[in-house]
Image (cartoon, rainbow, N blue to C red; front, top):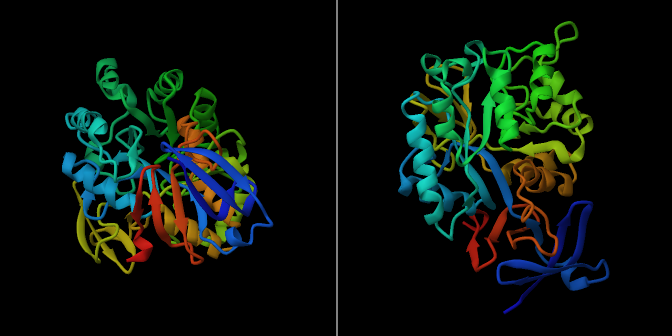
Amino acid sequence: MATELRGRLVLADGVVPGRLVIEDGWLRAVDPDPADATAAGGPILAPGFIDVHVHGWGGHDATGDAAALDGMARALLRQGVTTFLPTAPTLAEDQLPGFADRVRSWMPHAPADGAEPLGFNLEGPFLAPSRKGAHDPALLRAPAAFTDDQVSALLDGLRVMTIAPELPGAIELIRKLAALGIAASMGHSAATLEEARAGYLAGAVTTTHLFNAMTGVDHRQPGLAVAALADDAVYVELIADRNHVHPALWPLVLRTKPADRLVLVSDALPLAGMPDGPGWIGGLACEVRDGRATLAGTDTLAGSVIALDTAVRNLVDEGTELAAAVLAASANPASLLGATDRGRLEPGRRAHVVELDDALRVRRVTRGDGWIEGAGRA
């Protein structure tokens, strides 16, 4: 049975009144109609958000058991996130296969009333100690320290992995991941410009939380951030929480990168969506105060406490067009993952739809079969 929705459609090139027709979980028709007065007064209809870098939400940890993953998926859906990658911080070598196995085993049984997992993301352990951020330095390793069997045990279901390209064995690992269609993401790195360019040339396709925990924009010693911004082919992640990157830099990123290469991520902690207080990430104590998450007793950011709906609102509040902000939260991450069945309001794509009010808060969300009340209505 087909369902028709009317409202303001967030399409790749702008927002226009129109209608959607959903049938059997798919978008069967997407009909823009600028003259449709009913649609013009309706809600904002956007493609579901896709978070490729999220460590937890609502008190639930991505490295936890199936119940934790269930809770995380359900909490994210209420924020408009219809697809996600459970993301592990740096774990001990003997814990990495366990994380991968838990996510693999859970995915076929993930709740229909939660965000859909498309695999997992490993942010460590192949990070530079000098740019460790909120990762346990005792657990960091160079790719060369891992055997082929250790790496192979992690590959099934792996969609994104962060690698500092200057580490021994990094270029070889990037090439291996690229050949398998896994997105190598460069970050947590002290790379020179030349080392960073070598990583992208080897097949790295994206960049972990641009500017944070990497060599940056220096007029005499440019580093990874410059290599990422100057290469039109590679994606860059942006944590748009106003803490990780000053909003004054956001327009520079938007003007530098092609519109289809900016990926909004939350980098959210399990403490996201919870009251301020203490918690843990990757075995390290952290705390949240006034919307800012840091390692306990330090000023080192430990991650964010937002979801992608807040990131979209923040970009728009700072002057970004709504269509561009939504593109960075939906179509672009879908393209990064090769998920051609979602991310845009187009016929033949999955009916992952977020209904937003005029303040861009999530009223309700669907993965194509029934609606879930959004957090914006709480």
